[in-house]
Length: 98
Ligand SMILES: [Zn+2]
Image 1 (cartoon, protein in one colour):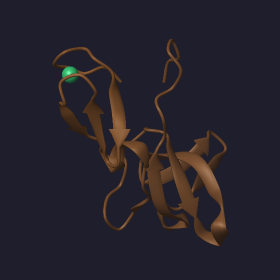
Image 2: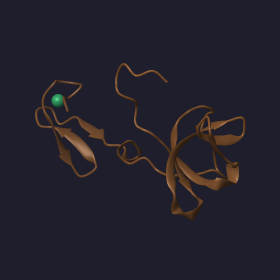
Image 3: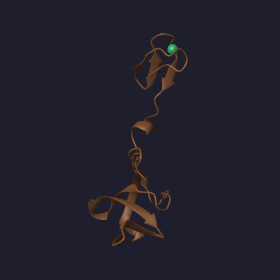
């Protein structure tokens, strides 16, 4: 990490990054480092967006919501209640299309 003020090196100190040259501090957001499970009762992902799903019977799958159902591919769809939690996936590799 490079200091945005003086372009010096920044080192990690607890939850902060601190510039060794000018002392500029930057807080590391925990949310950025650790994606978290979102209960479907709290919020649903955008339609057609692939997300990691925690399902009943302790199954985990990558699914997307479409017309009120969870889809894996054209032949596999699941009732909304099958999924209990979801979390965002990392960005796809560069050059990949949805
Ligand atoms: Zn600096």
